[in-house]
Image (cartoon, rainbow, N blue to C red; front, side, top):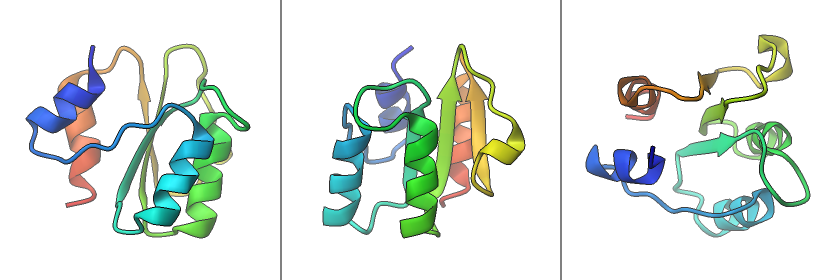
Length: 102
């Protein structure tokens, strides 16, 4: 499954980064970004769950989508209005979560 290709094929612009630190730098440089999709397990100074909490605090209107195939966070462990996708997820489920930003 190539998430970037799925999202681009649906007509969205994608900016791909490899870790949470780069994601924060990108959001600081490009505040127009409205959606953040993250895996829970990722390299860097924080995991995806910590990343989306940071984003919710600093960029409250951002649409947050979190995914994992191994970790199932409790709803209360995620920021409000976070979509969670369990891997492997269907393309239709990802696109439905993205529609929240439209």
